[in-house]
Length: 308
Ligand code: ZN
Image (cartoon, rainbow, N blue to C red; front, side, top):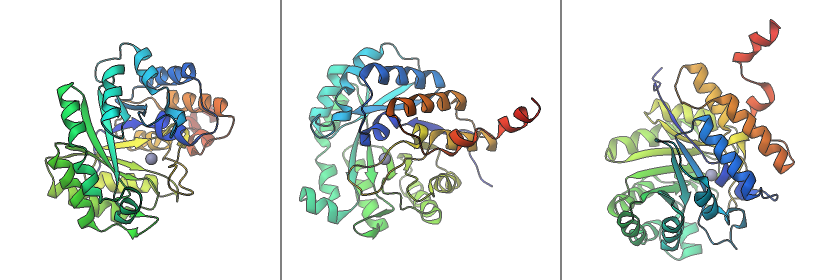
């Protein structure tokens, strides 16, 4: 089986995970979780978003988190989601060095809500790229629902290509494929990943899977088979998408890392520390989490517990 030696995990729990929660952790609690994530060894952490605080009140303190986190270790990247140039300005003001834009691959959804095609949306990001470049801020882009959407079913590959080309045209080469509605299946993931890697070798890729229908780790395996090595995950499987009905649950970080550990694939992330953070966030939020490994423990620990 073709598997990579090393995989990079981005922890998106503080953003995608908390975005849908009723109980909002305090800034202090978020800082503690963020420090714990840095200590657990994540190379990339999505801290929050610079959306309008009225639209996404859970993320209103993102600026403050960046201001208060202080020095971060070499090689750790903290990123935030932005909607427009106002987001870039907030990143500049609070010291955030990496931002991410997003567009939906659903033409119907885009036309209905924004009155423009996804490519037109991406072309409009040129100002963000210019501003980010001038201020030494790295910028990436994400495509939601490149596999399927609740409105149109399977997304045509040509539509995904058109959006990727629009991103490349405005100077964004780091692109995330985000199955926000949890509809992707492994053979489709394999084919699309293989296709985009071959057609756009100048781009670097992230994959973002929700476990809405239980296929997320299978999709990660399929993407790895196609040569992908960067994946988002959320501690405790926290999260959802506020715009997609029933789309709860990012793939759980500890489930992914336990699997990769057992497969001999290096992530640099300490799964026990991640599990401790998941327990902490479960306590803060006051409800259980959708994580297999948190319930069952690591498979590595089974033998140790039997000999006790
Ligand atoms: Zn998501």
